[in-house]
Image (cartoon, rainbow, N blue to C red; front, side, top):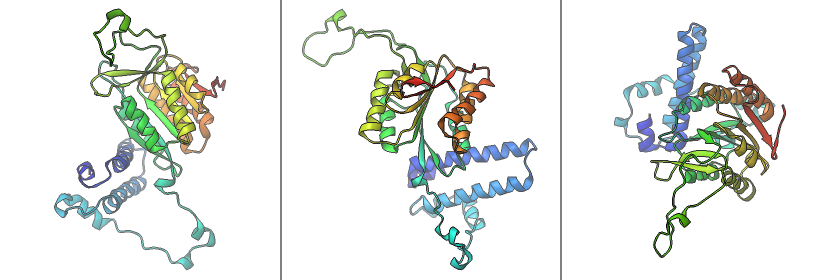
Length: 324
């Protein structure tokens, strides 16, 4: 299916859908193997996923060469027949007027991640898969993701997808980890040595990829604040929440929240299993319509189960820490 996406489809949107289907498939198979799922429920989910794949083939590609479709998917298209439409007379007045949410009308959770070389390896794909699973049945939220992002890609993703929630998964730090060095200057004349060294005060931030995708790039909290201010105020993007699921991200959360966004960060380093559990709990709450604060509390409990203290994850609103 990925090969077909690259050749015929909209690779960004359809690939995210395939990841969601994949997460549901493995969850269904795992639950069946554990013996906790009834055969009827297992088959119902499996048939639904097969139908979703069939819909992708029908709706998301243009003029697929017959030779490119694997035989098993040809069989699938024959096996999964669409239900005939109901007669208007069979519908009640409420049913005929009911609006079914479409993917275009749903709010976006934008999952952005970065794990540059020479930084500790994180299970970012597992976190994305868990979030997708929690939101798979949501009528209001859908997940979009971009991995290995540089700062320009981080910014463009926000401007392009216009998300309700931005979720960053990766590394944070209290200061730039790189050793200070002379910067190249775009000007005429010879390098001047020590006077070209750029001295700056320590400031917390997050670690993304540089534009070459070979090294890391540290982005300070003040830059993040300016980015989100531009997105919310100038670009009028309906941002409501940002999650910095990264170590030492309280300063970043406080700074960004000052532009009128609810922001979650961490007070210290946080273990990978606890970070993933927090994400899973938060989006379970959001899928259930609990709102940001209640979802935060649900998520915090999940992180505590993995050994993190209650105050490890922190919520900031309008520059102030919420004591909840």
